[in-house]
Image 1: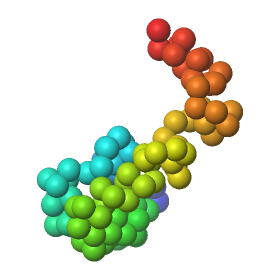
Image 2: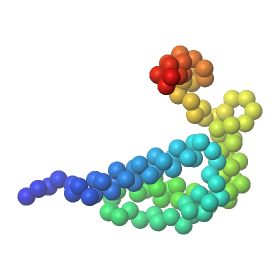
Image 3: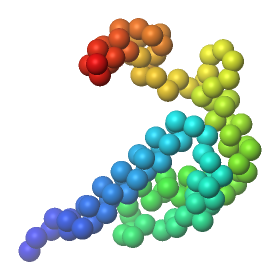
Length: 114
């Protein structure tokens, strides 16, 4: 008897993970659009297979989208990631690696990309 996880279940989890990463990338890039917020508010919160690792975090994301209006989400995004002076959350890895935004890690990345 084979006790391994079925391939389709593993692929479903990987697909869900990729979609969540895509959503996170969009949310880090800019405040969510009204269209994205509308989609989140009606999103299904039940995982296809019970006990999925991402099920509870996804429910929390959808619940937050349902609780906040678009203006509140945009204001929170700007307060956390933007604004005048030092933001609460830096979206740039070079700050976390070296303590500065434009330091050696960023220079190395730019060299690699060139």
